[in-house]
Length: 187
Ligand SMILES: [Mg+2]
Image 1 (cartoon, rainbow, N blue to C red):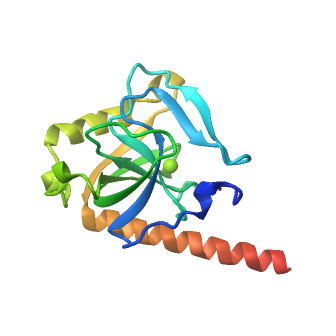
Image 2: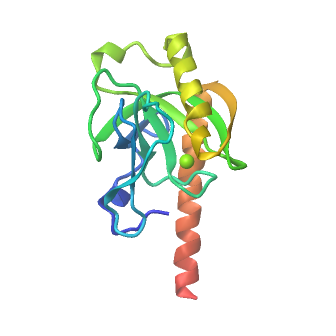
């Protein structure tokens, strides 16, 4: 879990949950370098250069103040017409959910579009996304760790309603964890 010292930890999950969320970008679209928020310092750090010769199919990062089943923030992939940058905050509209398993744990990815990009104004659910883009994302997450000897299991795509439910569940998990930690500090 992210250090509370990180400025990103103080960002709310979104203003109109669960359909409009805040996305913190770690890896801009087109990059092969895997940046992530360092749990100890709260800074953006270079985790690794992807072993596979492939690049992220969208701006990739996390929704703050959420807790996914793998113990990290809920992951999010934002379709963008132009890559933003590491640390950028994007107000995003949730349109789908990519379901996969990594090392035996659910590692779902929320698919979203920037709320303020007019070229994505008609994108509200999975059916609005070009089918080939969904295939690209699926192929990327099925193969990006192969040369590290890690296999990921792909479960497939689900609709915006499922993604919103996952956001909701991850916010609830975060709040429950926060309450549990506060309680254990009181002894
Ligand atoms: Mg994850």
